Amino acid sequence: MNDIKEIIKILKNQYPEAKIALRFKNTWQLLVATILSAQCTDVRVNLVTPVLFKKYKKVADFAKADVKEFEKDIYSTGFYKNKAKGIIGSARKILNEFKGKVPRTMEELTSLPGIGRKTANVILSSGFGITAGVVVDTHVRRLSQRLGLTKNTDPGKIEEDLMELVPAKDWGIVSHLLILHGRKICNARKPLCAECRINKLCLSAFKGKT
Picture 1 (cartoon, rainbow, N blue to C red):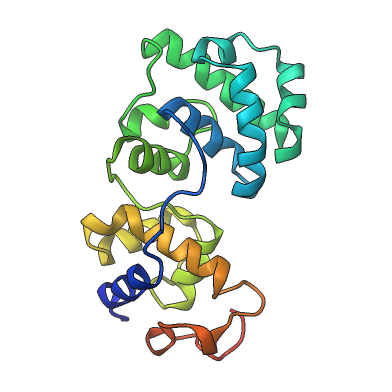
Picture 2: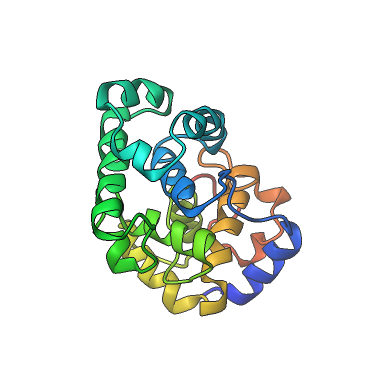
């Protein structure tokens, strides 16, 4: 098994700026942006949210939003029907059951419409500074498999594997590091193994895509 501590150390030195790329001012805005980021780039989401948050300023504004109009507002992020349903539904439940405040536990967050463990982990880590797990997106999944950190393909199983290997204090940062490395070096189709600082710790280095 590869030395995950050494991998994290190297990547921390390479990406000292590693943090969430989504722009937000409070935990509700983070929740909205994270739902919108599913199957969409952070760059695109960051273009949509300033206009969205100017139009809908409070949780209550989202809760009473017209669904069809809201779908048009977020259309460019893709999967707009499901995202609108999740965001508006979450706003209503937060108003009715959580006194208008975004909940801060995994159990409560995942009870909201459109919120799974991945989204909840993002909100807890980047919104509240609470590390309850590891965010597993396409980059984290791909790199975890290539590095030999997991043999699983299911995000939930991959998260469990990473939580066993990664020190709890690094659960929050490890996903940011792997995401950045996945975008810049360990691409899906043509990984730049020769430029990779952790290629000596990688089971898939110089073997092409996996």
